Image (cartoon, rainbow over the protein chains, first blue to last red):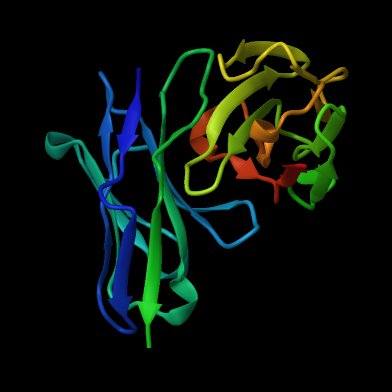
Amino acid sequence: AQSVTQLGSHVSVSEGALVLLRCNYSSSVPPYLFWYVQYPNQGLQLLLKYTSAATLVKGINGFEAEFKKSETSFHLTKPSAHMSDAAEYFCAVSPRSGANSKLTFGKGITLSVRP
Amino acid sequence: DTGVSQDPRHKITKRGQNVTFRCDPISEHNRLYWYRQTLGQGPEFLTYFQNEAQLEKSRLLSDRFSAERPKGSFSTLEIQRTEQGDSAMYLCASSSQQGESGYTFGSGTRLTVV
């Protein structure tokens, strides 16, 4: 079974500082990996996804993530935090093949941005 | 296409009542998923359809829960005899045959059981 671990439930950074949100996955074969963002009382919006050979993935709003097979990680970064980045962030995994392609989510990380 | 639509956005019901939620996926997506999200947690998988066929149900989906997708388009999720523990955000998502294209989520239905 696949699983995702997001270390820490809350990250706080200053505006303009580097954002680093960690995600580690467990899977017998490299899966598809996703990062989603959720603003209060809203659904989930896809930030970026890893589905092919390119290990550095660029997403929306200046976010990017690097797939590292040796570390089974897919950490999310942004060079300079903006106040509007304050939200809940979820890492998710799905199998590359098979009839059931359901997403399995981590518990999420709340990002706070200080002025 | 306006994305994935869910109705209603909010539902308050008394314990013991039945409720039904609707999800309209992106028209060209043949896969549809229901998730439940409680406060401070990530979404948990409930069930999944490919076209009109319900292919998997989570153990979280008790006998009081039923989902349908009668013509392979919209889907409904019904909860019978609601309990306070059913209070949560219910999210619907859809995807194409190949999941690598990503999963598009609706805004969710927030259920409060009083």
